[in-house]
Image (cartoon, rainbow, N blue to C red):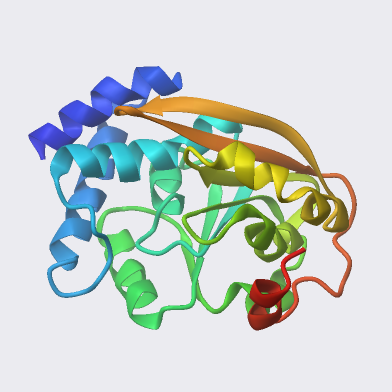
Amino acid sequence: MDKMLNTLEAGLPKLGLSLPQEAENTLCRFADAVVKQNEVMNLTAITQPEAVANLHLLDSLTVLAAADLRGKSLIDVGCGAGFPGVPVAIACPEAKVTLLDSLGKRMKWLEETLPQLGIEARCITARAEEAVAQLRESYDFAASRAVARLNILLELTAPYVKVGGAVLALKGAAARDELADAGNAVKQLGLKVEDILDFTVGDATHSVIVLRKVAHTPARYPRRFAKIKQEPL
């Protein structure tokens, strides 16, 4: 835990962030809980303390370096073990965070674990293209990482965002290449590229692509996932 905390504290200034000690401790406690649960449930391939701090915690916190979430709502689409949504909820308790994933066991674990750590977030077990029926255009932000290439990811996230809000896509070295391939998706879904922000996390560059919602997403989107994958926008 000390190695994780030290790595976290060393990385925060590089993101332009400063957190209360209690928030830093809670971030490490949650990450430690993920690593422990990983012994019985497939949550992450990353288990070394320094790597967890860099690739899970600091990577997730790039969301807060890219957007002011205070008083805003955010949905983490395809949250997996809770990244980036849970670190965002810890570091910015003023944000209203929803975690969405289709894997029931994973979401049940999050529902049980988060209250034990004093973390507030809504957990929804559903596929992204199905849950949107009840949650369409009801969030200020949608964030996601490691779910799919950008042209596919945008069709799963943009429908959740209010006009005026934004999609925050967490990407690695291929961010600009993926964006170059996603021009049609951006246009069709009512989005506009606002910025690509690069952050140094550990020894790597992590990027957040900010796409502003400038028009309503047509009701025909998202399509069934098989169709999205087969014929990306």
